[in-house]
Amino acid sequence: MSALTFPILQLLADGQFHSGEALAQRFKVTRATIWNAIQHAESLGVEIFSVRGRGYKLPKEINLLDANEVLQAIGEQRAWFKLEVLDEVASTNTYLMQNKHAAHATCVAAHLQTNGKGRRGRTWVSQLGASLTFSLLWRFAGGAAGLSGLSLAVGVALMRALHSLGVNQAQLKWPNDVLVDGKKLAGILIELQGDLEGPSSAVIGVGINLNLPKNVLESIDQPAIDLVHASAKSINQSKIDQSMLLGTILKHLADVLSNFEAQGFVGLRDEWLSYHAYKNKPVRMLLPNGTEVIGTVTGVADDGILLVETALGLQRFSAGEISLRGAN
Image (cartoon, rainbow, N blue to C red; front, side, top):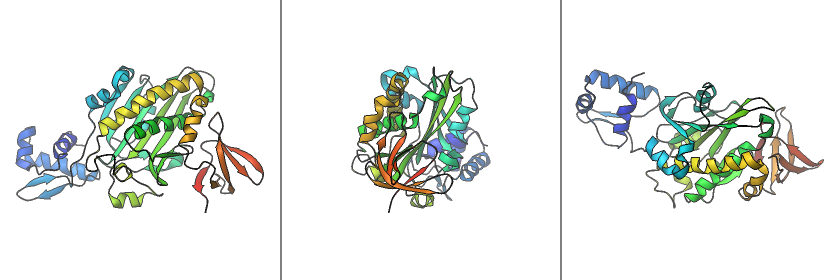
């Protein structure tokens, strides 16, 4: 890995040409060193135009995270968080899970996540400047047994943040997806550590599609959308401020997680239901053993369990055991 890769990408983020000579002078290295750093960036999937006589440029201007701007966007609760912005990481969730001594409310975000984790073993697709990926460590005094509904609570925080930014059509799909027009905009992955009864912690991973190329969106294994297309009327399509978005989400997560610690999911249930994409709709439930259950979603219980009216009566389904698809 070249230590210059991301400093160079920060300069190229303006979408303008920068000559190899100018970059070499800027960083006080040889042009060959610059070329090696560019090659490393391309090996990570970053597309860079190289034109003889003009230099290097990204296909378009991109917006990258700035830690100070994130903290400013959080506002008064910025002191709660320890923020790390990494250039490159395989998975922000894995990074935090492996850091046994990380402080409460540590947030790790990455310019580029190369092996992001999705629910049920899926890979989260991300690209430089086109996705927001971060993970938050939250420690709880109670045991993991009392964290039922946590992924739904996190969904409420995402809704508050997105709606505050004008993305009012965003909805929640049980248990951990954000949808716009039936397409996935964001996902939540929660990994728990600790005892069932004693102190526990959760690593809360969030991935949001910001401005993915068409071919990348089409490569995702389910209908997907990005924030640019989801919010054409409310957010500048050419430039989404990642730092403002992350700071706004963390601000709402602080409020929601504090509420969850005090009351559990029950205090957030009604608000979650107001965002529910499949409320009172017919659904097909896909169980881990491959069988299907057809029914109508009636809501969620106080502990976040999904309630579905089926031919056998009202059934309860817990997070992590089923897939939910709109029934035909």
